Image (cartoon, chains in turn green, red):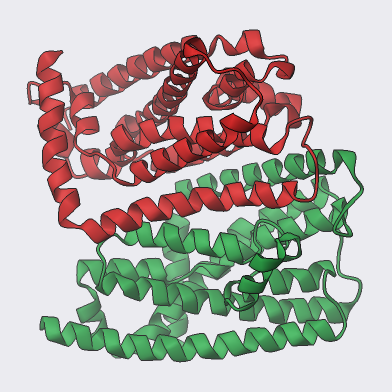
Length: 262
Length: 263
C-alpha cells in the first residue's frame, strides 16, 4: 500500500508545477459555469418548469454534473502516452502491478483536482448561483457513494480506451471520441429524463449514465426512495463488469507486447 | 506570392501522403470531431424539445449561428492548426531557430508544416449544420446573400486564426503559451448562443476585447432581421482584417524579441 501512496503523492507534487495549466483550467471552468448559468436563465425566461424540473433544480443538476464529469476521465491518457513512447515495456518490469500503479497516479491527480479545480468552482457556484442541497444527510451519503462508484466506472472505461493505443496511433482522435461519447450519454449536459424516449432506452443499456446521471440525480432529488438503491445496483453491475473487462483486455494487450519483442 | 503557393502545395502534398498512411487514424479523427459537434447540437435540440425559443431565437436560428462558427473554425483548424504547437514543437526543441535561417517567412513555414485532418470533420459538420438550418429560416437566398455568407464565414475563420496567433505569440517570451491559447480559445464557446442572453459586460468583452462575437453571432445576425444587429454585423469583415493585422504585427514583434536574445 505504501508504495502506491508514494506514487500518488509524487503525482500531486508534479502537478503543482504546471501552474499555468491550472489557472487556464480554472478560468475555463468558470467560463463554462457562466455560459451554463446564462443559457438556462434564458431557457427558463418563459417557463417555470421543464419536465417538472424547475430552474433551481436544473442549475443544481447541471453544475454538479459538470463538476463530477471532471472526475470521470482518468488514466487512459497517460497509459496511451506510455504505450506510444514504448515506456510500457519498462514499466512492466518494475516491481508493481502496472494497473494499480496507474490508478494510484490517477488518484493523486484527482485529489489535486478536487482541491484546485472543484473547490473554487463550488465556492463560486455557492455564492453566485442559487443551488439547492440534498434534503437529508442520508441523501448526501448515498450521493458520495454513488459518485465514487461513478468515478471508478469512468476510470475503468478510460483505461480501456487508453489500451487502444496498442492498436491505433491517433490517440488524440480516440480521446475526443471517448469524451464526446461520455458527454453525450452520461447526462453531463442535460438530465437524461429530457432525452427522447428511444434514446433514453439506449442510454439505459450503456455504462455512461452510471458515471454522471445516476449520482447527480440522487444529489438533486430527481430520483428518490427505492429508485436510489436500484441506481446503486446498476452502478455496481457496471463497476464489476468493467473491471473484469479491464483485466481481460490488459492481459491480451501485454501478450501483444511480447510479440513485438519489447 | 506564386512561390509561396507552390511551396504550400508541396508541403500539403507530402503531408497528405503521411495522412493516408494512417487511414484509420484519419477516419477516427474526422469521426471524433463530428461526434463532438453532434453532442453539443444534440444538447440544444433536447432543450428545444421542451421549449419554443430562447430569448426570441428559434432552434434553427441558433443552429445557424452554430453552423457559421463551426464552418469558420474549420478554416482555422485545417490550415492553421499548427499554431497550437508553436511552443512545444518549435520553440522548446529549438526547431524555430532552424526555420529562421531558411529563406521562407517563418510564420508561413510553421503554418504550412501541417494540414490538420480533423479539421475536415469540422468542415463537413459545419456545412451539414448550415444546410439543415438555412432552409428552415424563411430567408430569400440570392447570389448576393450567398456571397455575403461566404464572406462572413471566411471572416469568422480569420478571427479564429488571428486570436490564436495573437496568444500563441506569447510563446516567444514564455516558451509555451499553450495554456493561455487554450483558455482563450474556450471563450469561443460563448459564441454558440445569441450574445443577447449574456450579461452586458460579457457581450462587450466578446465584441471589443476578444471578438469571438464576430465569429458567429454578428454574422448570423446579419441574416436574421429581427436581431437588431443587421447594420452592426457589416463590420465583421473589417473586424477580421483588423484582428489579423494586429496579430501579425504582434507576431513580428515577438519574433524580433526572440531572435535578438539569440537563444
